[in-house]
Amino acid sequence: MATHRKAAGDLDLALLRTFLTLVSSGSLGKTAASIDKTQSAVSQQMLRLEKIVGQKLFNRGRDGITLTHHGELLETYSKRAVELHDEMLARFRAESAGREVTLGVSNAVALAGLTPAMQRLQAFHPDIELRVVMAAPAKLDTMLTGGDPHLAISEPSFMRRTPIATWGVPLHWAAQKDSTIDQSKAMPLVLFEGPCSWQDEMLNSLRSGGREWRVTFASSSLDAILAATKSGLGIAAVPAEVIRRSKLVSLKSASLPPAPTIEFGLYQATALPKRAHTLLEMIQTSAFKQTQKTQTNREVGLSTPS
Image (cartoon, rainbow, N blue to C red; front, side, top):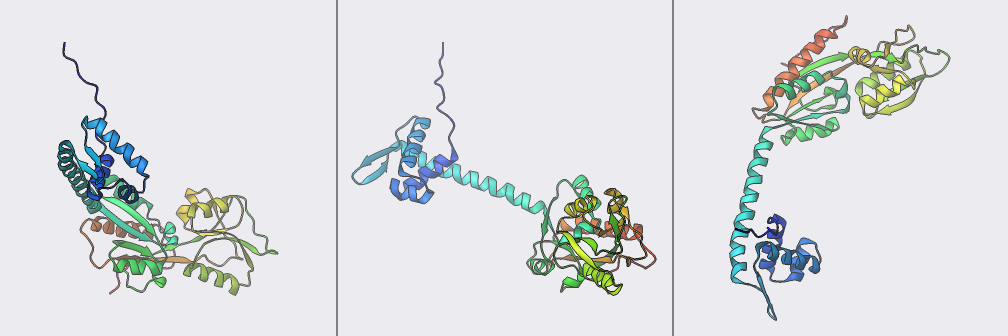
C-alpha cells in the first residue's frame, strides 16, 4: 500500500521574502534590522522554511551564511514566486483603481438630496467603485486641480472655480413634534458645524428681525443634527424631504424669518475619466429632480453658467 508523507505546510510568501532578504544581506543581524524583527525570530523563520521544503538551505560558518545547492535552487524559485505575486496584485489593484470614481463633498452636501443618485449608481453600475471624500470647500478646490476627486459638490460661495451646474435646495424650520416657541426666550438652534454661507444668512435674518438665539448643538453630521432636533434640543433648518423622512414637524411662525435656500454647485476635475461621466449625469439628473420637487414661489432651478 502506498503511503504519503504528511505535508509540513504550504510556503508562506512572508518566509520567502525574509529568505531573499537574508540571501541579499548575508547576515541574520542585518536581515532582522531590515524587516524589524529579532535575530531569533529570523532564525526561527528559516528553520521553519527548511522544515517546509524538507531540505537544508544554509551553511553557517565563520564567513557568515552561504547557500547550499537546495538553497540556491530555492532562491531562484523564490524570486519568481515573489515577482509573480507582486505582478498579480499590481494588475488587479490597477484594474480596481481604474473602476474607482471619487466624489468630493463639503459638510452641507448631506442636505443636497443626492442620496438617490448614489444609490442608483451602486445598484445599476456595480462595476464602478464610488469613493466619497469629505473636505472643506477651499481644500476641494485644490484637490480638483490635482484630479482627485473627479467630481465635487460644494457651496459656490466658497469655491474659486466656476461650477458646471448649480441648483438650490430650500430649507424649512423643523422641530420635534408638539414643539412651541417661547417668544420670551432666546431661540435654541441646532446648527451645522463649520463655515456655512446659508447659516450666516439665516442668523442675519434672525438678527434683523430682532430675534435672539443660542446655539444648543452643532455638528457636521446630518444624522447627529436630526437626532438633536428630535430630542428637543432646538430647531434646525433642513429640506422638507428630510423633515418628512425624519418624522419632524415643520414650524410655521410669524416670528420666524423664512429659512434660507442652499445653493450647491457641481465641479469637475480638469481631466474627467470616462467612467466618471456616469456619476456626473446621475448627479445632474438628481439635482434637476430635486429642484423640480422642492420649488417654491421663488424660482430655483438647475442652471449651466454661460
